Image (spheres, rainbow, N blue to C red):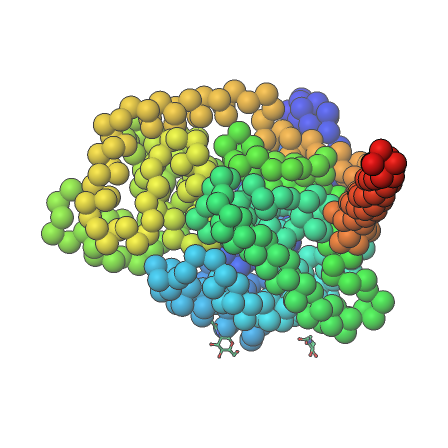
Length: 471
Ligand SMILES: *[C@@H]1O[C@H](CO)[C@@H](O)[C@H](O)[C@H]1NC(C)=O
Ligand SMILES: *[C@@H]1O[C@H](CO)[C@@H](O)[C@H](O)[C@H]1NC(C)=O
């Protein structure tokens, strides 16, 4: 009877088998992939997480429900771990806002390529994964191992599941152009949608730089992949063969941007994040009303009605949790996407933003806290956003599950790829057509000009002759 009930309950869906590629590169990314794997498992599907160890200190593949296949850390990845554990955190407060990050990360990409290589070369791994016969695979596009790996596994139906709200350069490979004139880029620094000329210049520069950064590393991956399969298409080509792109963006709070049917926003799908014990800093010594802890259940704390405000570095996870709990914010973005998230908070009016350098002046922080506590508008806005998102017409989990099931049944969804990707720069931006129209307009103007001159000359001559005759 129980079994029958179980079958009836699950009866509405055929269980599918998913492969998640989730290298252990940073906590928030691993958590996101783990949590969306859990969402699929809770819906009755099977998920296997392939989890190469880039930073072995994370020690968690993000999910307790999924079957996890770990791939041991290769020698080159230790440099990456070293960077993440030391320099990255140490530089956070002094780091400049935008382009500097690219140069730091550039160096690390080589360890990602090496770990990807080690994963492919891991004895028996590819064979056993092929035997699993996965319906659909998913991965983030932080490192570019997945498109080639899925190709080697013969998985045609695959999607991008970004833990970030936007990935600047990816628009080129996901068939969905963005517009840096009014969409703030992820790495663009501290600007909102309303940009001055120089901010638009900066934003465009970061946008292009993200693209060049990727394209610089594609050949490095290509070369590595070719040592395993000489016929493999380029990473750039494979990148574009995804069927859907799920972004961790909630359109009701994010900056509006151009989109397409293949891009599906599931921001807010994941709230509570994983736990990692921190080292004690002892910054609270001698301060009686400051509680310092090496671990805290953030989401639970935010839902405590005694919480009046939340001071945060503005990571995607923290913002999602604060919105979910309806708590007003004081945000102090440190680096990366946090600056963009902070501008979002400012735009939506549920918090105050401080620059990290402003913390030098305690008065600024005190004023910000006072303002958020005393001016009811922040709390009212936070509450309104919370209620609105709870009441949104379709739940993000449902959207994710149904689209993944649909893809498993009918994918790959090649019809969603637009022809724009095949056009060159001049064709894409219609520069050739605009130039032709301007050219014709110019010719017409020139002809009109000479025509007018000739008519004037003719008239002058006729009038002149008349004048002479009259004389
Ligand atoms: C970049 O790599 C070189 C050599 O591998 C290393 O000496 C240097 O410290 C790295 N730079 C950063 C910012 O990690
Ligand atoms: C990839 O791994 C193989 C075998 O471990 C090694 O021989 C080769 O040099 C590696 N290639 C790259 C590009 O790291």
